[in-house]
Image (cartoon, rainbow, N blue to C red; front, side):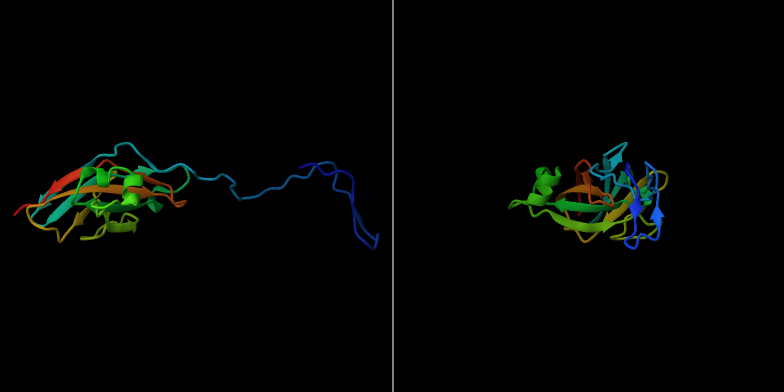
Length: 163
């Protein structure tokens, strides 16, 4: 910013000469975060036991948000893999998809069970989806969101419950 001349107060008792340039220091970052979090591997591993399915996936990183502040959720459909394969398909949720948010957005915790997304060691996390019908096929996907609500989807995985 360049300032020309002087700044005068109205009573003319004090004149402030600030020179030709003025530098403003600020801790405010004016960058806008439009980039969704990235993962080195978007695959989701699945294992089942009775009416419960366990999902395991790699954590993401973001250019603006701390990794510990990223939030994850799980969506599910019993109809088709195409119901939860992209963000637009998930958001559109066209009948008969019945895509459901089964695990709400949350940060990864150190421990927990059920609807808690928890650390699985190193750079991965896991979650259990309970209360599913026996002998059914379900399609799952993991979503990751940064602090500016940029969302990235992982790869759809199929899970079959045992009898």
